[in-house]
Image (tube, rainbow, N blue to C red; front, side, top):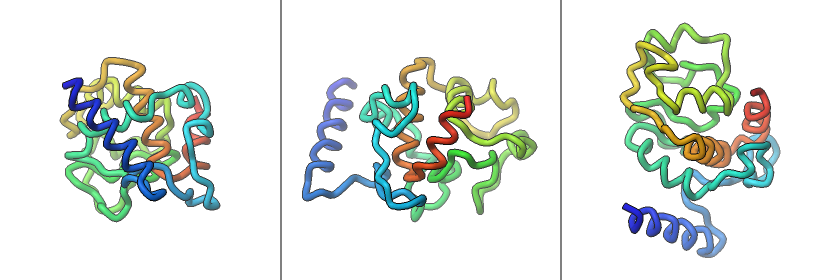
Length: 163
């Protein structure tokens, strides 16, 4: 498993270095003015995250979710622009009834941390089949990766600071 994670990190580093290109779902032009969001732009604690670890952990999520807008929804909703978005509002996705009733809240770093810890405890009745991430640093890393991969700098910063 460690060799696979190491290989994934090396592959990401090579892709980032190749001709100035970037792998899908990594930092790019923000919808809010063209700024490229980096780890240094994130507020604490996300600016201390291991983005490569977050991206590696997100591999578990890619069977059901994407952060690339053109990929649309999968078994789970597309997570592009998830920050500062109300739960259960991604277009063309059928959410569980439990999640549909939570329209007053918005997804923030803190809320995603609670969700990722144990989705079924956070929202009893959710259809999401995922046991959660026990390690707080892993959750921080995935959230930071999502902030960058989501390519929405202003919303990610706002959502991260609403804790």
